[in-house]
Amino acid sequence: MATTAKSRRATNDPLWLRILLIGLSIGFVSVLLVLPLVVVFAEAFRAGVGTYFASLNNPAAWRAIRLTLLAAGISVPLNLVFGVAASWAIAKFDFPGKSFLITLIDLPFAVSPVISGLIYVLLFGLQGYFGKLLAAYNIEIIFAVPGIVLATVFVTFPFVARELIPLMQEQGDEEEQAALSLGASGLQTFWRVTLPNIKWGLLYGVILCNARAMGEFGAVSVVAGHRGSTNTIPLYVEVLYNGWNAPAAFTMASILALLGLVTLAAKTYLEWKVNQQLHDTLEPTTAEATV
Amino acid sequence: MRLALKHHSVLPGFGLTLGYTLLYLSLIVLIPLAALVARSASMPIAHFWETVTDPRVLAAYRLTFGASLIGAAINAVFGFIVAWSLVRYRFPGRKLLDSLVDLPFALPTAVSGIALTAIFAKTGWLGQYLYPLGIQSAFSQLGVTIALTFIGLPFVVRTLQPALEELDAEVEEAATSLGANRSQTFWRIILPTVLPALITGFALAFARALGEYGSVVFISGNKPLQTEIASLMIIIKLDQYEYAEATAIAVVMLLASFAILLGINVLQWWVGQGRLKRAA
Image 1: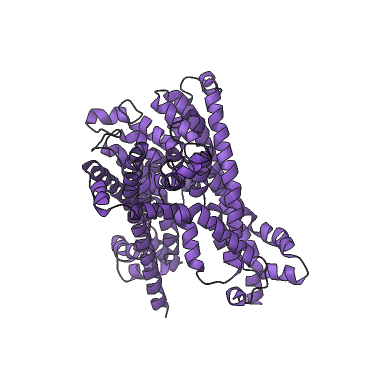
Image 2: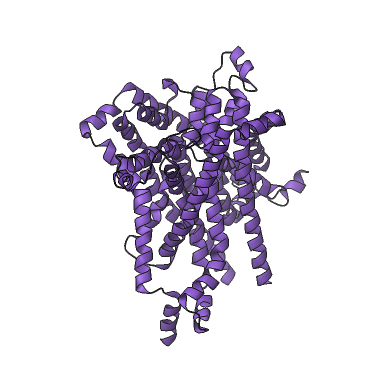
C-alpha cells in the first residue's frame, strides 16, 4: 500500500499541472486544428442550405467531382496492387538490398507536392524530354487528365505498401507454409490465408491512399495548368476562391472536409481492428512458446 | 542465382511480385525523379547559381526555412504537451483529442488553406481581434508561419507518444526515492530519454513544412520578396515555361529535405546503437 502511494507520487503530476497541461492541449488543438474544420462548414452554410446545394449543382462542380473520382479510381487500385505485390516480395522472402528497396518505396513521401508535379512536367511537358514526341502524336499528358492521374499515383504511391510491409513481416509465413503443405495452390493460399490476415491493414492503407488522392492539391496544380477541364475538387476550390466566390469555394471544400472526417473516423476504427487482428494472429505462437 | 536470392522459402510468386514491384517503382518514381536529376545536371553551374541566388528566390528560401523552423519549434513545445497529456493523463475526451491530432493529415491542404485564411484575415474569425492589436495574422510572414504550424503538429505528437509510453516508471520512482523532485526528474531523466523522439518529430515537421504548398498559398498573400514561399517560386517559373530555373529551385529544396531525413535516420541508428550497448 505504501509503495503504491509512493509510486503514484513519483510518476503523477500535481493536479494544477495536470489541469494546466490538459487545458493547453485542448486549447491548442481546438484553436489551430478544430477551428479550421468548423469554419469550413460555417462558411459553406452561411448563405443557407439552398445556396449550398445551388453551388453544388452546376456543371463545373460536377466536372470537378467526376475528375476527382476518376483520379482516385485509377490511382488507388494501381497502388493497391503494387502494395500487395511489394509487401509479398519483401515480407515473405529474403533478398539483398531489401531495406534499400523499402527506402525507395517511401521516396514519394519525401518529395514535396509541387516537386512531385514538376518531375512529370520535365518528362512530358512541352519542353520536357518526351514533349516533342508526344506533340508529334498529338498526345496530351501535361495540362490534361493523364497528367493529373500520374501525379496522383505518385503522391499516393507508398500508402498501401508501407502499411502492409510491417504487418506481413510481423505475421510471418507459417500459416502460408501450412496451407501449401496441405496442398493449396499459391493463389488459393493468398486468397484464403494471407488476404484474410491482412484485410484490415489493407483497408487502412486504401482509405489513407484514397483521402490523399482526392485531396491532393500541389502536385495536380502543377500538371493541370489553368484549364476548366482539368479541375479536380481541390483545384476548383482554388479557382472559386481566387474568383471572389468564397461561399462556393467553401461549399466545395466542405465535401473534402467531410471526406477528411470520414477518413479520420475510419482510420481510428481500423487502427483498433489492425491491432486486434495482429494480436489474434500472434496469440497462437506465443501460446505455443509457453507450452 | 535463384536459390541464392530465395534462400529456403517454399512460398511461390517471388519473381513475379518482386519483378512487378521494381517495374512499377521505376516507371512511377525512379524514372521521373531521374529526369529531375538529369535536368539539373545539364544546367551550367553559373546559371544554376544565378537562379538560386536571385534576390526573389533567396527571399523565398529565407521565409520557407525560417517559418518552417519556427513552426516546427512551436510544435515541439505544444506537441510535447499534447503527447504528454494523452499518454500520462486520463480525462474525458482523451480519445477524441487523440483522433483530432490527425486532422492536418485528414484535411486536404487547399481546404485548410482557405479555412486558415478565413480565420486569420482582417475580417476573419480571429483576425478581427488580432488586427486591432497590430498583429497582421494573414497575408504576412506570420500567416505563413501559422499555416506551417498547423500542418506540423501530428508529426511531433505521433513520434513522441510511443517514446513516452515506453518510459520506465521504475526509473522515475528511483529518481524520486533518491530525493529528486518532480522538475529534476523531468529535466534529468524524462527529457533526455525522449529527446531523440522529440528531435525526430521536430525534424519531420520541419521537412514537411519546407515542401508545403496548399495550406500556405492562400494565407500568404504571395507578395514578391515578402511572402512568397519556395514551392510557389517553382510554380511561378513553370508558368513562364522556365523549366531549368524551376528545376534548380526544386533541387535545393529536395536536397534540404533529403538531408533532414538522412539526419533522422542517422539519429535513429545512433540511438539504436546506444540501446544495444546498454543491453549488452
